[in-house]
Image (cartoon, rainbow, N blue to C red; front, side):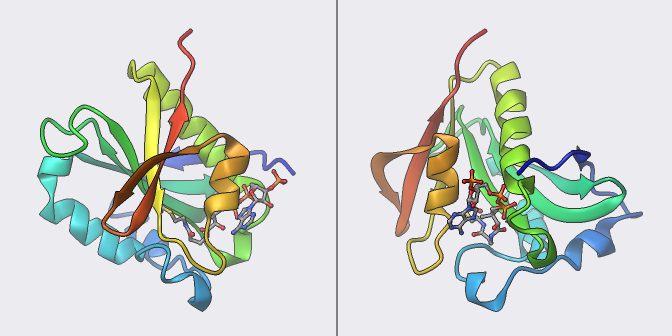
Length: 156
Ligand SMILES: CC(=O)SCCNC(=O)CCNC(=O)[C@H](O)C(C)(C)COP(=O)(O)OP(=O)(O)OC[C@H]1O[C@@H](n2cnc3c(N)ncnc32)[C@H](O)[C@@H]1OP(=O)(O)O
């Protein structure tokens, strides 16, 4: 399924509350922090070089994505790490998450990177099949109990 009209927008005073109101299912909470928590974490860890956007479908906020964008130091120095991704429970399984990954991969590739990293917490209902279908593969590393994945980006 494809989801036309999906795009990323900056989070400002005008849409912050609407984006913070996005919700995942209760049984998914082990896999990703809330938008509010992620925004607080972003503010508290500038050294991770947080980069985040709201996901919109048309004029409707439907998700949130945050990366650690090529931080200048630390374990993921100079690399692009998909830190948070969530699609509101009302909008899941409509191809929106895949479209977000497509757009993020393109932005990261345009930044000159050869790979996009992420990690997930294993468990019932884990997002691994979603990432695997997109082309992510395990690196063999475990980071704080999470399985680290890599998507190789082709140069153009
Ligand atoms: C770095 C991190 O933040 S890891 C945590 C990721 N976030 C979460 O787990 C929070 C809860 N889940 C979500 O927010 C969303 O369901 C996401 C982000 C995992 C996926 O977004 P969606 O918009 O629902 O996925 P989308 O509809 O684009 O699915 C793409 C493909 O993956 C599959 N898929 C999506 N989620 C899952 C899942 N949990 N299990 C199995 N398959 C899945 C879809 O069936 C589809 O397959 P297809 O190519 O055969 O059609």
